[in-house]
Length: 86
Image (cartoon, rainbow, N blue to C red; front, top):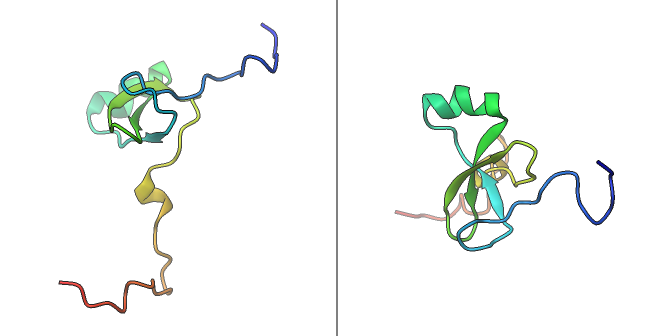
């Protein structure tokens, strides 16, 4: 197998339902997702457009979960903290 620039080493994410190239890591829910899927080098992935959940190789490049990337730093106030929201 050659490392040619025409074919990347790892396949990029593409949703099988809508064809979107935006995928996010999804939470591992069940026993099989937590302990059996990693044995087969699989991870749960959710499409960013149609929200379809699927399993892909752990080598497939996808984004981190949104809730993991938008954490508020302790000690810093966010711009929305001054608003009164019911």
